[in-house]
Image (cartoon, rainbow, N blue to C red; front, side):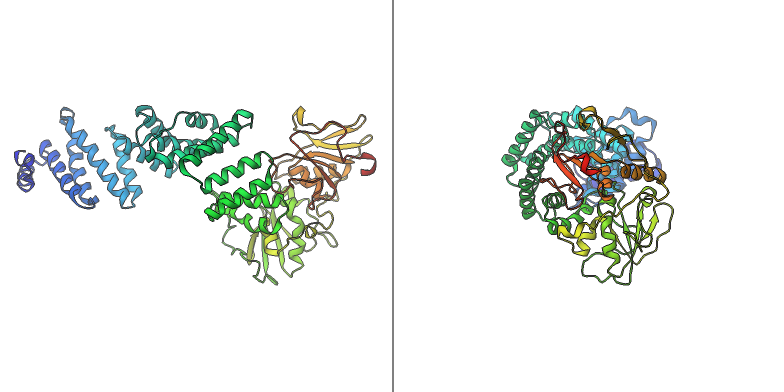
Length: 534
């Protein structure tokens, strides 16, 4: 020990080894040989993970002995060794091994520095051990002052996890606490402000929320200057206020600064589509696959990737991405693909399969239906339904309508109703129910489960039996439009890209008139003319 304290490590190591030759489990010799080994490993540039692991192994043997409880330094040095080992593995890119070392520290209840706890929480988040990751983030925030360098990253990362789990209230409460003003934390400060703006845009947009969003965006600009994220969030805010053209310009500015900003690219696509800029919109729509958790490929079938690929004579699988709105909106394009000499197979849920008219002389004649979960599909190429406009180069509004292309099953007759009848949403809140003239029968409509074709057949037959519809923008309205039914659709400010931002007509569904707003106007509803619609 005297040699060790004086820095004569070779002499100390020889004597420790001599002791262990006689008494292999001598606790002090094990402990101090491990400490000496850690010192040598830490002195290397960079620290050697293998030698650090050897030192940890020696101290671990000492710690396992009953007498270790009387020597506090053993626990402290085991924790220091595991911390150094985790850091060395992390710098070497061996994140799984770094996580193992930190988990051992936690399992043994060893003292853990804030930097180690943050690394542990981040590692657990990376492997999606969400519950444990959140526990360590919260422990770090509760035990550490807000000025600690690790406090703000821990808060930001915990908020991201809460957002992923849609725990908005707790996430906002964390972001509403004062942020560090240390200039060295500018990146995390800007990230926290961006997260707060994102969260507030998912809550009811009252005046308080709007003011906080504006403040967050202003502070982001003050802290980090103009950035792609700032332009993107500003665009999202403008879009929530109904300024789709202004939002599109902001998204374009974000993409000028960061062309690979997937969210901005997709938001730009959706804004273009709402404004009728079909070419730009559909070209960028494929960026939805760049977002986390988006699975594009259907099995191992090659993807039809470019419009200039010749698909004539090929068998192409088209699939609807399991989005309720996508199929009735773009099933109209299947004949355009068929007419190019392509053998078309469309995979859909059992419900939609019941409504696609593929018989001789019908709209989708020649298209093969594959029912998802029931039919095995073989094809040369595959393409998601929403990418067909780009692959087929259909940019004009005139390309999008050739009459009704969905129909109720022939064996499901349309019901009759006393007097004029209007289809309305069955699950609408009282404030969202359309005002109808006296004497009109309101026929409630609801989407059945995707795997109940009989229910979808009855829904289509009911739509065929009413005189008109008064529906909010959504799957029911798409189905009514695909069936060619007349009526009115309420289009809110935040409607998806399939509904135009302005105007009372849409090239997708010429039989429907559009009313823009958050709630229905006072009766009578403009465009709902029951005498002519019947």
